[in-house]
Amino acid sequence: MTILITGGTGQTGAKLAQLLHDANVPFLIATRKGVAPEPFKAVQFDWTDASTFENPFRLANVDKIYLIAPLIMDVLPVMKPFIELAIVKGAKRFVLLCGTGIGKGDPFVGKVYEYLAQRGVDYDVLRPTWFMENFGTFFYKSIREDNEVITVVKDGRIPFVAADDIAKVAFDVLTAEQSSNDERFVIGPELFSYDQAAALLSEVLGRKITHKRVTNEEERAIFQANGLKEDYAVLLNTIEARLADDVDAALVGNSKSITGKIKLRDFFEANKQLWIKA
View 1 (cartoon, rainbow, N blue to C red):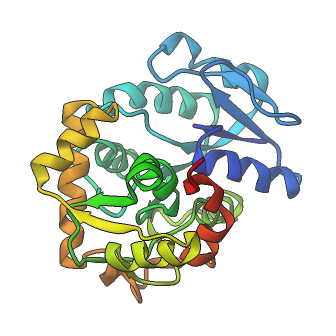
View 2 (view 1 turned 180 degrees about the horizontal axis):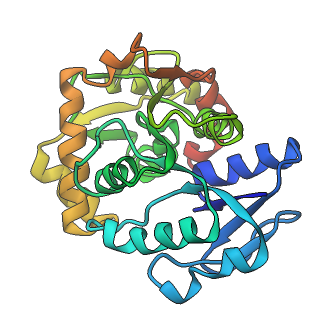
């Protein structure tokens, strides 16, 4: 039997693939172009092209699927036909990547969470907090060029988590004997406000990095300028604004929380070349 990884070349998917490879667990990577780094096996798959949905099942007996949603706000009508097909083809377990700010029944992937829970299949929903990798993606340009991290989070504290730790949890639930049919929060081992994270990055880089506080409207405009559609920019801003109230800090000690090992300083040190100016 084989695990299918959608979003197989993304932040968590690629790391999950490596873990499965190292453990000699059969898997197949789904990508839009049907290619993946050697020695991984890939299949062409596109959430927006239903004609590709059959492809994975022609290549392997897929029994478990790691689901990464496309950035489409009304995503359930896009994902549901594939999930239904997968069930018919023999898939028994689904692991959905969600987020701390999106619960069952909420917009976007929260609707997929709700559907899986009601469908009666075996599932796990992973709800990681904010990725450490965001400092190298969302904040990459502002840090490198302007020495700023720009948010609406104010003094809210976040247990930033690394994609490696999220992938490890995904690996564990996909290879477990039974699914939980529940959600699991995935958090990092330390709490940082963005002021504190900027100060830590300043130490690592040897130059002053500051946390620039902006309004909701300003942040939404920044998101859209970076390529996000308006509806998704609004959703992301709404979720992020809640962090000012320490909502993710409250996950520390939660019985459903799984704590990763990678510390923010270690992540910054390992990736410092990203933010060093030419």
